Amino acid sequence: MHGSEGEVPWVIPGIDSNHEQIRAIVLSTLAPDLPEILLPEALETARAIQSEYHRAYAFSGLIKNPNFSLQDDVSLWQEFLHTLACSDRQRFLGNLVDLSPTIISLGGKEALAAIVEAIKDVSRWWP
Image (cartoon, rainbow, N blue to C red; front, side):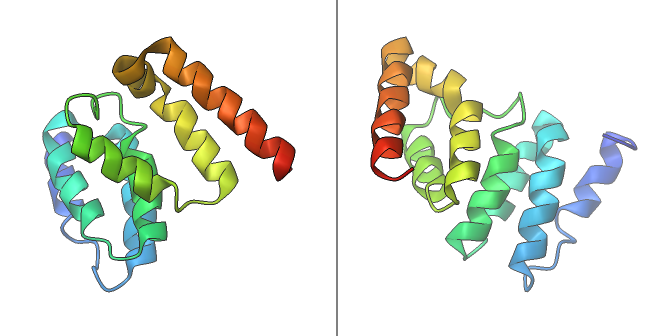
């Protein structure tokens, strides 16, 4: 991330809430590199996005941040999974890759293997 950490707090609140698509794009772009201390504010900002599609876009940036974890909050995990499912297929599959450490942590390698098999089944029905 360019600039000092002290500059970032001014960016997130300044994203116009009337333009959800822009807010989601900016959050998705900034979130992977945000310092851990700013992640709660970024999460709150992303959750405030009304459109599930745009919120999913913002969430996709958060899950790329190495300091962001869904492993300790099952309800947050469920919220993210439900929202990310509103993405198109390609983006959702990419998000599953980013979520694989969480999937393994919560359900073991067996859970990840089961998801891979389910994706294969679905792709046979809807290529």
